[in-house]
Length: 103
Figure (cartoon, one colour):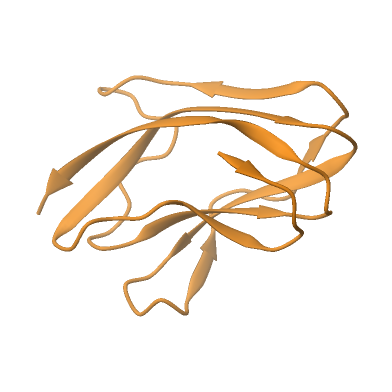
């Protein structure tokens, strides 16, 4: 993940007929920011918050670790995308681990 605009970003796009579960998130902002985790329904318009606004201090890592058996974010519904919304135009970089299964 590497973005620097204050908007919604598709971090993981679900393939048709599948659902994803987030097993790990590691994000770092270059300056003060907020990060909100969301999911977008298959209609590509409806967003649902999975977290509140998470404060991100400059140069500090936000980290959430899970596993396949115990994901950080339980499986989303079929065809839903994982969205990261940035509150300011500060660069945020990192990575997300996930599983994807056909349903």
